[in-house]
Image (cartoon, rainbow, N blue to C red; front, side, top):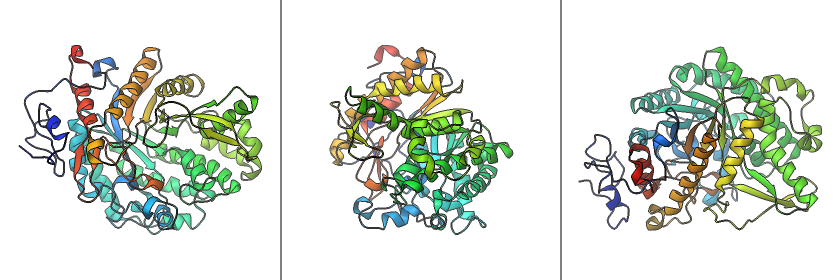
Length: 491
């Protein structure tokens, strides 16, 4: 028997009656995984596969900079490296240099994903790993890494859901203005073509950019993300160029016959904090900038009038001519959902909103837990934006409230969080909304951007000193839900 960490309250759960495929022990670097004779039906996350359509996809999501280890494989510098090296930007000035060392441990990580009964792995390519110094010469080590990565996913029976860009821009492109420079659309198209030619024949789906709102707004208006700007002109142009790059990538991928292409947006269910007209107006503006700018740009080839009132004068000249490219048709829509927002009137002229605290339980990020918001957004996107396209929940999850091992490993609150959100997905499907999949953020505790390694979203605990992975109790519940079939045991 493989021994886990002594006194681990989770070790006994995994060493009791949980099947790990046909293996006789855990993947290398994982604690507490064994191969006993039967599945313990308790606990589950309150669902079984039979509750969902036959081809419904369950997966976990990740991103390159957050898990790979950017120091490996001759990857180039990114604007997140320089942002993190600037005092005051990131907790403890931490970066993704080592992260979860997925670069060397991906086989074991995929083995666990498959063991849990999951169908898919959502991942991203690092632009700076593929084009480290310039856009002329690709890095063969980077190309080879992603080639091996996708082959390993397929060998583990996992559908590869690729995101081309998840927030780390090559430093040399950031030096040229990054997302404020219109040329980034053509640079990104070239990147998309390179990746598409390498991997396209083996991918299940591709989304060009993860959460364009975060790329543009957090990076250029609030300054919370790289490159750390606080400039309204830069913000407006980044909001436009990130969508122009999205559309250009769609064109580039279609030109080389890569299909099943999607748009992935992070959405929040924004509501006024009170019944005042001022709060209603600001909640509407929040929704326009956070949600409708990106959905509307792609799916309707228009930007909301509420946001244009403030931003149009800062947009590039003749910006309307880009809407045809921005609105290149996609095949599906992905929604990343974590929380709702209650909006009141703030003091500033723009944007002039104030995010207020509600009275619901919160995650370790301080985000309210509101599963019903996911249902509202799925119905809204289906009725107003999808135009008949299928929808995926491409991210959903929560951060633990503690970093203490004994508390993190018994993550009952995560089990309830996932159970309640998955129930909402099941309910909206029963109403006729075409939801095709659900991805948990994330498999591993990982680098969480400005928060460094202080927040843990994973189904699996990562010891960042040793890189040992320890599945949390939510892993057992998830596996039981995905691999058990006797509904009388549903908890």
